[in-house]
Image (cartoon, rainbow, N blue to C red; front, side, top):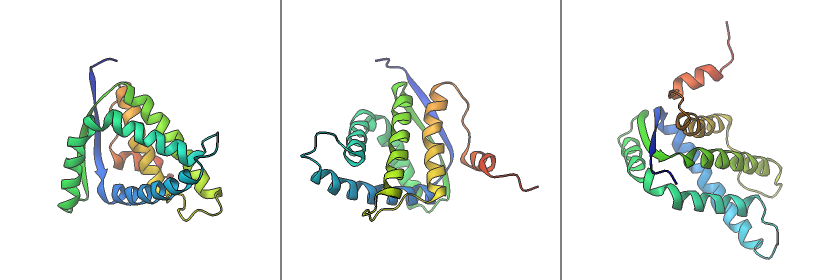
Amino acid sequence: MNDQLSPVHLLGFPLALYQQGQEHHSELMREFSLIALGEEQESHPTVPARLLALVDTLTRQYGDYTDAVDLERDAALEAGLESVDLTYHVPAAAAEASRALGAMLDEADEFCRSGGTLLTLAPPPRVQQFRDWYLQEFTHQISGAQPVPWPDYLRAAEPDRS
């Protein structure tokens, strides 16, 4: 694996929206953990088991690259800031990991919409938008694109009302 790290700048990182997304993610992981426990006898893992395995793998692979910046983000949250600029330094493989995580989370959202017995609903549209931006920034910047600050991404996503 290439040891060279790529900087990924998350500019205007919206802390309240991040926190809302984390709350949803925690609820989803708890419920999916319970579902996966009941599926251990099945030969084909479903969305809950696959998502849990992917999140566990990514945490083990990339935790060392993200821990210090995550502390910075958490300090900004504690300070009551609205947003913060963060810079991660990650290996190139983080781009594919971001794509895989995005695809799996999209699948989990669909599972939540159609799961029937789930307590966890799909995330609100703004949380979904934030997640898309966050993961795209990793894939795009590792590929050499310039950072797109959250406010700019949001403006570009909004319909023109003129």
